[in-house]
Length: 261
Image (cartoon, rainbow, N blue to C red):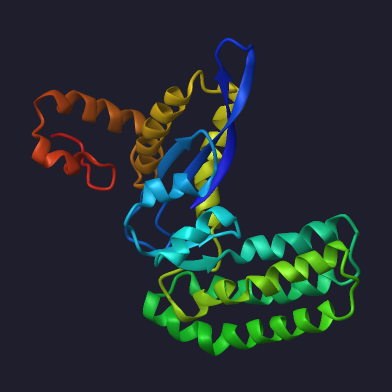
């Protein structure tokens, strides 16, 4: 899951107000290729809970507090290693930490294993990670603990280290599960079409306009993920819908659709 801020018009004020787009998608390892967008007026935890309802699966995400109620209710939390790494990357790029480069090398070793694991089956990934990635993760953890004792409390390096240590259990759950990724970069990539689109359409006219756009974009991006041209897919589905049986509507979903004829 991933969310990003968007803008809607605030009628009668001549101003815009903040709204949020959420992307829910299976991992890049899953057979199902799909993404569902949800457009909401805020990013409080109530919005993700309303969408997920009774779902109790595994959720790869950052440390946003709005997700905590879902984890308490039985959703399994998996941390995003890219978020942890990015904090050191930013410090390194801005020359604000003398040790951030060391952290990036340690994170890089973990990602090196993931390059090897990417084309494996879930079972083979689950075998590889404890053998090769777990020792590297343990080395990173020891390094974080050691460096935390050496840096001042009020510096960016301490905050970056603290984030990883606080999230360590969630960050390393992927090591024991071959079905899940090391990070949620796949979900972030599903936000990209909206980022490109926003440079053209700038904002949604109303909240319900954003919600309708989210529904349409869910179909368009899911069609792309399944190798379909969005225009061909939508044209075919819209043509069929007037006479299509409600009981067979699932057959028109992008991951199940095939062109007529």
